[in-house]
Image 1 (cartoon, rainbow, N blue to C red):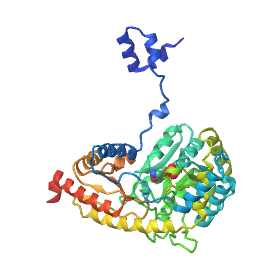
Image 2: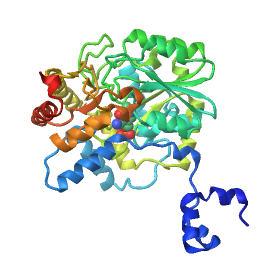
Image 3: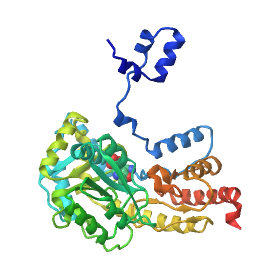
Length: 436
Ligand code: PMP
């Protein structure tokens, strides 16, 4: 029998249906049971919603310049595809070990040692379907009800989602005006005894900012002082364009030295280092990523993998081994192309009255600020409808993006030139006073 409490929970739709049909019990049985509080807090990733709207316009015959998604338009390198196909042909199509194949975990271990100078054991490496599980599963494994998690605002939407799903308290912390780092005073105020984890993302989405080394060192000092974890999302680590003092120089093996917080004294034991293949090797659809963390945590994350996704396809992992250990020329070529696009786009946006665009040092996004009298959502909607340019409102990344837009420069140079021309025309029409 149903209790009166569960009747009350049945919700207004159930009650309306029951009244309309003149009977409570059978109508209630037809209404779906409710969902958990933790998933009711989830919001979508803006890129998917804007992508749907852009596709709807394209279906009606409109040309839309697509700058909304963080998905490389280059092909997955041929040697990587061949390794995946070869594995399928060899029959590597069954379940693999939940933490990843021995070959890929060993390859990740070597890659991290080479690029970050941090040496992990193989059982401190966990492979997953994308970098996203490297965010979500550690949050589930670390955060208890009431624990606070500090993360960047604006920041990648999964950070807020993983914290609320884990039952933790979200503590978004503002970035500096140029988007390169936390506002360090705000960060110092935000971290306290209740903080269980600090999320950093450098180079970052949506700003493209690269944290100065001194700020990373301050994050490490805070994490040690308050004994909390640091989740370091390094998915854009190979996409840095300037000599930023973080050791971006390359050597003969085509790999660069990457400065990671995990390399700082006393940090390996409290860091979850996350990276993946989507951006560096143009493998978004393959679904492959990895994380490195201390053994006891890695074992909990392995168990979450066992009971959620099971494992990653072994042929995908074979492609991953080739990506990490094979030639890196495609990464260098892609980085040069992105650098040229960034340089063009930043200058072109700064030439539009009412827009100010800092020059980011990494990733493939710009996050300009606008002065027009409207919200970010109104401006993004207007530019899609009027100019046929798909981009994201800054508010998709947190409340502090209310006067910003995010544009991704994964499209061709021609696309970027077209987008800037279309935006300028539409903005001049709508906000003539800014153009006087
Ligand atoms: N972290 C950041 C900051 C990202 O921008 C993305 C992808 N947009 C991810 C993680 C997830 O990447 P993956 O495709 O490897 O799951």
